[in-house]
Length: 423
Image 1: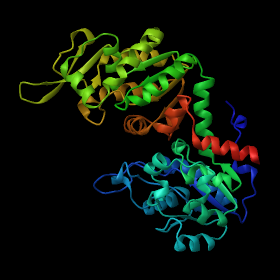
Image 2: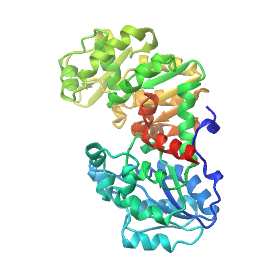
Image 3: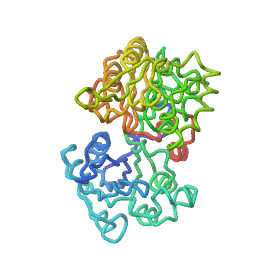
């Protein structure tokens, strides 16, 4: 899909010189739990092109962004390090003030000169911006224009720019309300991510292969029926917990240890849907041929063992796929025209269980296909094991990406298209 077909105005449609811009990227980054420092700068790097374009155009840029939430309070930290990293990456000074939209923030925005930028305090300091508020209060975009954030900042601005596709599923004031009251444009990243996912969904190069793994299998099940029904996916390679659930749905008894693991995590509820998918689209699925499990060596050390699906021990968990599966997946990926990836093949953080993810990710990175990877664990694994430059596109979105590919409503896209149609 061509970017021009998107009903959203790009920043190139606007004269930026001397204009005050409310810029909403997604800077939410993985944080080391001990040091509270950022450990992956992917989203910050993706923000730089739009930020530089705004500053080079002579805009006065007030950046609003979030880090952490009530659901991951351990990551709810100030954005001071984000400002320092953006300054280093962009080569332009990005100031910081630990105030979201209070008197100090207002004064700082008013004193910006053309070509200057400041990050305001963490949006999640505001009740209106936390996920529990969105879940419980359920305001419309129009109603959100009366929230504290929008009432305070919108009067200062000439333009609102959103570059936060990763948070496109969030119905929050910073994401959907400024479009109601300000001229609105999309940043480069928003345009790129939307276009890359539309390419995979609507016009994939054939055969189109989906590689779905990880422990959060709701993501896989959210999108599988949609992409199979629409014909977007030609093959689905299942690994991780998704592969286990699909095998059980096919009638394989993996033993009481696996059954308890799935039940304890409420993942057994996906088995009926897995059965339905296999009944309708069984020829599209490629399930693991073998799995890895833990055994003990003569010296008491923990070792990796592998067994074919028919010979698996019944008293073990299976934290990784085996090498027969790795080889089979690699052959299919090598012949693909498009590859979409979400979720690692195993517990890759532990060296004993990293083989599946490392080898399959290398097959994807080295494939001549159009490759799109997305989601936090997927990107972290790719950064650990492969050269990120080898992928056609790295999508910063996790939840937004899954919902998009599942055909679900994305509040940000609706708000941006509505603003574009208003002109």
